[in-house]
Picture (tube, rainbow over the protein chains, first blue to last red):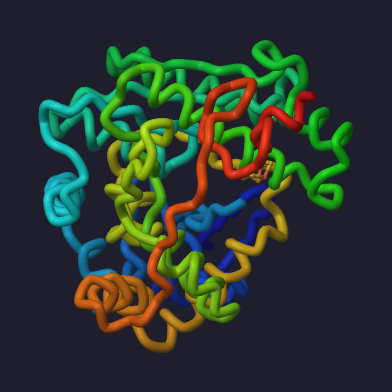
Length: 63
Length: 291
Ligand code: SF4
């Protein structure tokens, strides 16, 4: 499975989809987050693999 | 075309980002290599990425951190100051710190509560205080300009907001360089104005800059975030929308294709207390907060 972490939330998804599809599946906006795996920024077209832990980092700031 | 620059490998992306910033500085005649700059540093991704980039480009750039006193001893302000100071120490850069409570007697939340401004949110007081302090430190330090980390998304969100309300005065003034129209006003520049927020965040991550991920607790529900989300949805449908919306606006304005009101010189005079220019008779809005 693929573990996805965003802020204080955590999900488990099946592997083999693109990072972009994983973000969409979680109901998040792909424009609003960046994905990091093993400390490295990964492209949204990257295919997720079994055992991955992907951390999503919010892009938007404001105020 | 979707964020084609993020498809570059890490090393090329970092190189591209730094040289693109330099090209923006040149294109808008922001400053030269002999100028001393002050960077407004919040501890967030944009301001630390900007400070990093300017230092790498060889500019003499000091930082200014304003301690707002939000969130108590271990809260947002303390954490963001820690990030800003750690970055300065690690890179041998000078960070000026102005702690609002220590300098003026009250933190931003306390000041907002006492003055009752901003309908329960400290943001209007906060913005006013930050503008005053940034202007003061830039002028007192003899800096040629104040550089802020505003990115393309910030600028496009403001443009959308101002366009929807036909705020023609604000539209006339929105620009990557705000000239010092008065000796008491600092020149302001935005070297990241052509970079997407995704790109500044990616730069900070790939460069390994330790920035504060958390937002100021008062940012939730901020109008800027709402407009950014709207623009993100547009961008999802037609990539490049934000870029052309903002940059074509700047181009049209430069060519005189937009009929915006000519900037009237406001009648400015020195505040009786702090000396900064103000249109108000007597004390400026900042000094009235503390009166
Ligand atoms: S969100 Fe409001 S209170 Fe927080 S730093 Fe921004 S302007 Fe200040």
